[in-house]
Image 1 (cartoon, rainbow, N blue to C red):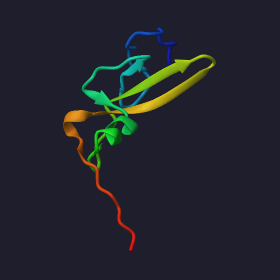
Image 2: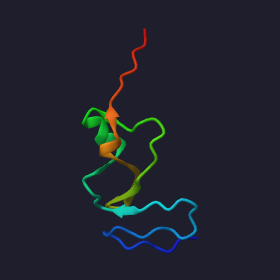
Image 3: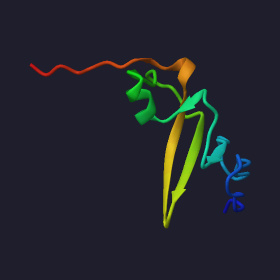
Length: 83
């Protein structure tokens, strides 16, 4: 089991994880974005792009966990057309 992470600060990495992924709480660096934020910018992660970090957001009694991707590696959003 991973040690608890401090709130409101970028946390360290879980020592037991095979691939170490940083976790940010309440805020994250501007160069990282969730899929939802990328879509608002008409972007999407590239095929095979790995998660750069995780983002935990706590509001009231709820906690939301999202994947963060590097904006610099994102590509234009592709719209699937069904005919």
